[in-house]
Image (cartoon, rainbow, N blue to C red; front, side, top):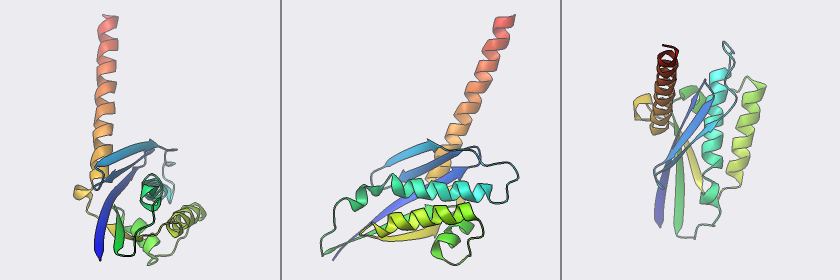
Length: 156
């Protein structure tokens, strides 16, 4: 039997970005979503769950072709949000209606797949998607600082 494991790291930022990185195809994507409401009880967790949703949705090419009988493909979706992973694994109870809807949408996507899919916790320092979001945040901050510098220089 041929076993293939495909790892996909996902991460979300309360500022309104979700990202994923696929180790198999060495591809990534950052999407913009509505930012989490400040001090919202489940805001950050909703963004993390959306990151998983888009990580699975954008990588649906794995389910386009049916694996052969001798082929077993395992998709390992990894996030640094332990509570979100526990919700998807079923070890924690979903207490928010919006989180429940996102969970249901993820599970619906997974029912369409012919593969074994695992959700695993990953340390924050090892999450490539989190690194991509951090790079984007730094770049935006640099552009903002450069923009302010150019503006103040033009005023002189």
